Length: 172
Image (tube, rainbow, N blue to C red):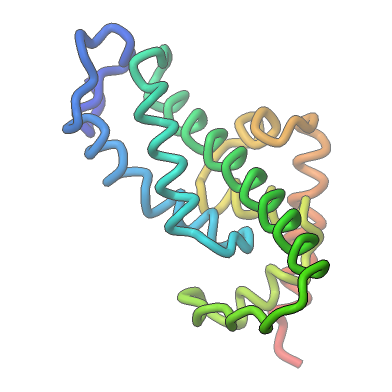
């Protein structure tokens, strides 16, 4: 058993009940939410809900360690976020074709505005790597697995992203 009470191999558990999912959500929900927000996901709560719906459906089939479980959840979060970005782009294309009122303004950002501004100055790939490494607290190998990039590319993106953040956050 892990410190959180989740079995190391969840597939060995007779049935994964809501308590296990609730524990998993309590432990990883804030980190996944922070990751989604830092990556510029417009509907963090909606995507977070979708992440844990997918986790709940697939959790009985999961086999692996608690570290593997964390990486698996963030892989699902990454894929849900990509799906959300695709959906938003499709909606924007559709809305450009239709006359109508302007879209409602985005809600106030709960993160530090200066950090959000600095993160938005990064390339999308750099932002992905930085948020997976430091918000989601994943290893280089886990980030490489999630993004489908070699570890060397992840290291390079991380270094360039950190340098760009340092420059963006430096006092003028």
